[in-house]
Length: 319
Ligand SMILES: Nc1nc2c(ncn2[C@@H]2O[C@H](COP(=O)(O)OP(=O)(O)OP(=O)(O)O)[C@@H](O)[C@H]2O)c(=O)[nH]1
Image 1 (spheres, rainbow, N blue to C red):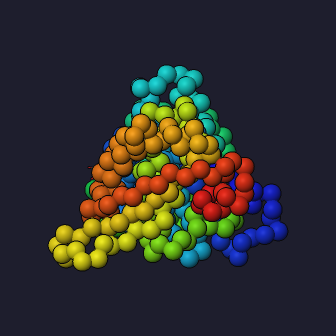
Image 2: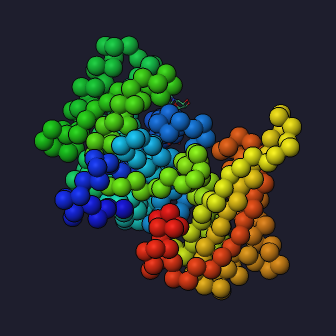
């Protein structure tokens, strides 16, 4: 996910910054709650973990001058389910592809082995900017927060050497304290870049991106080996169905799935359309949870020959 802009310092994109960030931290550290507070959505997407190097997008923070894309790290939060090298590779891959890392440590719990394990992973991953985020600041008093700040700073110097973390930001996702500051600090580490997710005709673009991700995940379920990177999902429109009672609205969600070859189209659709129906059913549940409304999901599968190698198609498909 490193962007070409790094080698084109002449173009600063009018000061616009965009890039990828990941929130890491041990279970219960407050990552999901903070993601939701940053993105402004109640439902974080928890679709199946991608086994490819593609990332699940957890949410996008849109600003007039920046776009911060929060992705998920497979593995880092669940060390026991993966072994040695595999885990290290997985973590290294993800960390290598983001522009900045937010390391979440709860204000109300002493730094423990889980935190140290992750800190060591971050140190091993190299020179990515790491911002330490002290979550759940509302649960402790000023004195305890100060002590935690000092302890976290010390941990940073211990594992990273030098000055340690790039920044340390206390935050409370539940009462909104410093949530914007977390976004500001992470955005500061994003490279100059045009927006990575285009403003479509949809009024609420982050929702469309998340809807597309949910459908993509559902469509790849069980056929990842056959369709590793050959599937692009484009949400054409999300419109309220007319003539619905106010207390029972319905959204029409029209979506195109692009594959590269007719054989891939056949895989997605399945015998007599059975697989596509299943994809629709599975994705619909997640989308309804996300949008908080019943939806009618209209899926179309199209062949866009060699879209991965065609820059014009890539732009059209939102890459
Ligand atoms: N008081 C308070 N509680 C919080 C805050 N942020 C998260 N919590 C609570 O802490 C618990 C864990 O939060 P999550 O956001 O699920 O933590 P997580 O890091 O995503 O957890 P995993 O998914 O297990 O990795 C939940 O019960 C949250 O309600 C906060 O700012 N203040």
